Image (cartoon, rainbow, N blue to C red):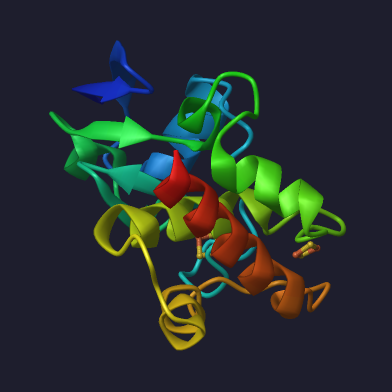
Length: 155
Ligand code: FES
Ligand code: FES
């Protein structure tokens, strides 16, 4: 066991973890942040995407020990009440069906919009190419990101 200390959604966290514990399992199992989903555990689906030190990462590819000292934001930390422009746009544009991929999609999109406030459709598709939607709702997902980008620019 080793102790890791990190900031998750603005809260300082200290936990003992096994050397092989993945960040996604620390978030879900130890911290109860089950909005971060596990679709594959092998870096294929993007359902586990969170922000680590301000950049989107697939949290199944990061050991909890590698996150020591970092700042992590999960979907629960994007807004406390679902009021973030991306969360609202995914609802308005029907960008979610079963919702399994949605937290990862939104966290990847938030990473994109933080770096590029006015992305083209191609740039959105490129930024989300590591996120799979088994409901194949890609068209509305892209529309939702475009809507959120407009809302955020006008805010
Ligand atoms: Fe991490 Fe699928 S669970 S990429
Ligand atoms: Fe079902 Fe994307 S909405 S997996």
